[in-house]
Amino acid sequence: MNWGVIAFIDVLGFKGIWNRGHSADEILSTLETVRKFATELKEQQNQMSGGDLWENLSLDTRMFSDTLVISCHLPQGRIEPDWQEDYESIRRYVLLRYVVLMLSSLVAAAANGECPLLYRGCVATGLFAMNDFAMLGPAVDEAGSFFESADGAFVFLCPSAAKTYEQRPGLLSRATFPYFLEYDVPLKETKTLPTYTINPLLRAPHEMRPDISAALMSTFGPATEIPHALLTKHTNTQRFLHHAQKSLPPSW
Picture 1 (cartoon, rainbow, N blue to C red):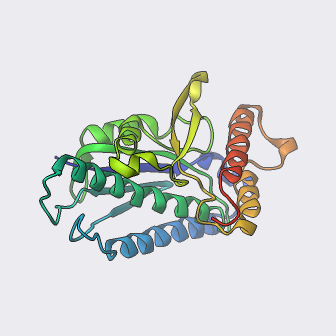
Picture 2 (cartoon, helix red, strand yellow):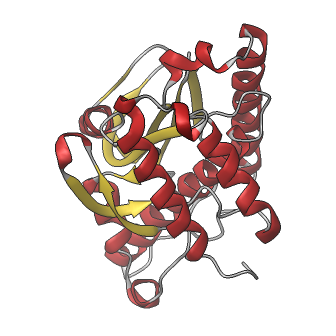
Picture 3 (cartoon, rainbow, N blue to C red):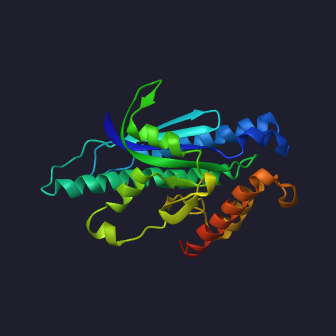
């Protein structure tokens, strides 16, 4: 097994999506749009120069019904510096950032389809192995245990990924980055997890952020018709999107 980053996200409320008035063709079309966008982002990032960090990047994207899995093992480093420990921490942080930025774009794009989709899930880091038909390892186990646990539309860092972010060295440790949004994520059974979340408004122009927030919230249906079982998820998601919008300056 090798060290890498793995993300599991799925559509919140997918089991009840048929009650929103969308046809099967519209739902499948939106899922296809998400799949195509994920593939395009993967190809773009795989072609980006890693500078001194690595020669080639190889992201893997897989979709199973409404669940999207994004993974990548840490590529071989290009240099062998004296500061090897910090070098590895930087490489791990940058790989995590690539996946987080990809997820930020994906979640926003999913809100703009014929059938707006509301994603939730998590990102884990650590050891895992994979081939054409299976994934296994501690990082897969952690992601699998957390990705359906949020009580709302949150894509967040598991404890392993939060640790990877917090262990970034040198000047990186003194800076804060808007693509890692600190938040106490509400989990089911009234618990919360202090961690970092993906901001779905991050890559959107300032003037489009309210529209994306509205599209995401529309997936719950009219406010007066929200089932009692979804009220907490609705409130938690609305509160988070308000916080996410406030956290980004107009010029970002």
